[in-house]
Length: 104
Image (cartoon, rainbow, N blue to C red; front, top):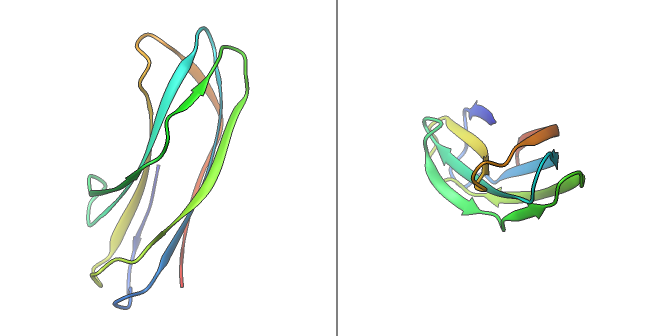
């Protein structure tokens, strides 16, 4: 999921990123990896990899949080939230995925 491009950034502006992830693994234990990226395209620089989230079949898993970024450029920036299933052969149903960016 992406937000942006955020344009007209002042040098040293802070960007607040908020995310909410909610899903239910359907058949087995599921390991999900979440990453945040920034750049002038959606395949930008890796900012952080969040702790892997593990859920069991039928269990509602919810995670939310925030990340503060201070880009060093004034060029328009994309922010990307990647949610990757890293358990081979596992399936999940996402019930909610939200991603917001605010400029301070």
